[in-house]
Each structure stands twice: as structure tokens, then as C-alpha cells.
Image 1 (cartoon, rainbow, N blue to C red):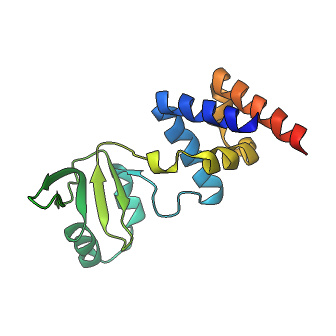
Image 2: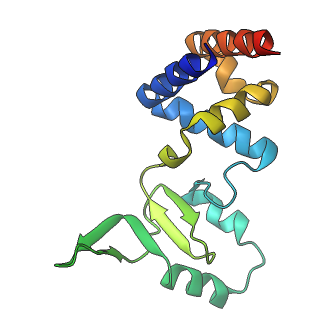
Length: 149
């Protein structure tokens, strides 16, 4: 049953977080699946902002924050610390400001929609084929999808 296979793939990705990160980033490279939620290595900051006014970059860092460092006040609200260029990764918030992090967190995208999108675009996601167990799960999903048609 298709839904059970999707659940198996999701469970596999939960155990293999780095593999999921690779697959979702490859899917994003093909069709923009992550929109503005992609993580970049901090070294890519120069390339992304090449030719950009220094003041604009400073504003994006000043109004950004560090995703990993925060305090929680007496009302339960998070207060993030400032953007940290010494972290491994960065991303952008909805305003284009910089968010630093030591970890890629794509967990919000780990759902049946992402799995179905990966299945439809499997040809463009080399990481699936690089892992024999994952490839077998996607083969199973593909067979079930063909049976439904």
C-alpha cells in the first residue's frame, strides 16, 4: 500500500537525517521545492552577496539571528541571539535577513508531499540511488503508484 511505503521512507529519513538533507536539497536544486528555506554553507556568503552593497549585507546580518542560540522569557517567548558568522550554515528568513546555524533542519519538509515529489523527480536526485535501501523503498513506491493507475 502506497501510504505504508511512504511512512517507511519517512521513518528511514528520520534515522538518516543527512541523507534526507541531501535528497531535499537535490530536489530543491531541480525545482525550488524549499523556496527560501534552504541552508547554505557559510563559505557561500561571499558568492551570494558578490556585488551587493556592504551596507545591505550589514543590515541583513543585524536584523538576522542565530537559530541555535536563544533564551526563553517568563512568557515562554524565544529571544534569539545575533547572527553568528562563525556557524557552519546560514539561511534567510521571510524578510531576507540572515539566520546562522550549526545544523540543517529540514524536518518541517519531511512529509508525504516531499516523498511524492522526490518519487516524481527521482531522476534528478542522485542521493536516492546512492543508498541501496532507500532506492529499494522508492522502487516499491513506484510499483505501487503504477498499480494504482
